[in-house]
Amino acid sequence: MSIVPAEAVSARVRGACDARTGGDGGAAPLAPRARLLPALAAVYRAQLSRARVARIPLLFVATFQSVGIMVLMRGVVDGGAEARAVVAGSSVLVVAFVALNLLAQYFGQLRASGGLDHYATLPVPPAAVVLGAAGAYASFTAPGTVVTAVIGSVLFGLPLTHLWVLVAVIPLAGAALAGLGAALGLLAPRQELATLLGQLGMSAALLLGVLPEGRLPGPIAFARDLLPSTYGVEAFAHTFDRHPHWPTVALDLAVCAAVGVVSLAVATWAYRRAAVR
Image 1: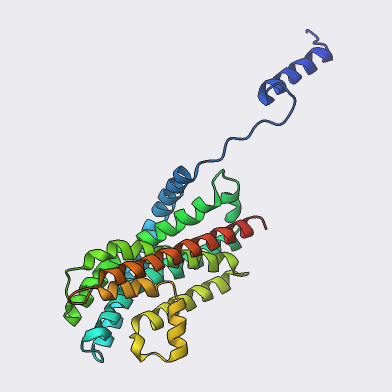
Image 2: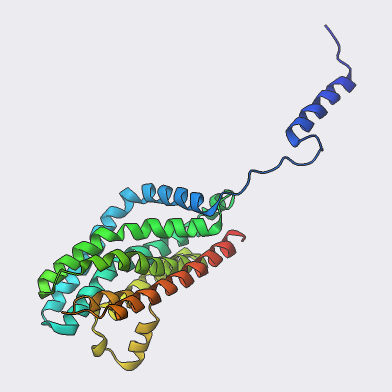
């Protein structure tokens, strides 16, 4: 049996460590952080595949709920500006149910269960996590919103000519509401409170978005202007006019986009704040 001197063993260990650490005896360099767009695409795909099975039944519920509201309102609203407001508000309500309510619950659950620790260990920018999750949840609202808009237009005798504007309304209203939902879920101190805030936000979108503006009292009408989805509702409602005023539609969409940027920025800040605790 051969005996290896201790000095030789220690020299080999030091050589292996130097090879791993670059020869300077320091810590091994970490992998570089992922860039925003590739990380965003990866998080979006992961969230989309995760939510595909679990959220489709809830999307059906959101669509059925919006269609049911339009059927009820058909008994008290005949047409005109009120019918346009009901159809536009009910269509955007699908976005609010998924992007605001469900996303608030998801981030509240993620924070309560320690799931944020998983994302914190990944070399992924915080904005990619928030934007990826928000985009995945907002993507599920497109089919239900289109179906609701078509059924509402037929139910109230509104033209289907300009339904293409939903291509802009859905992502912009979805971004604004998803950012708000993510912020509520991340800032709520308890999971139950995040669920409550998500439900209250969806109820506000229901009452302030579906009901015609002329039927609302002054203070409540002012609160309607503070709701992020209001400008998406207004933009969509204007397209039902015989001759839509497109500058007004563009202005409403621009405001909705600006609100979306602010809400997503707040959600990103809330994610950083929750991830370090």
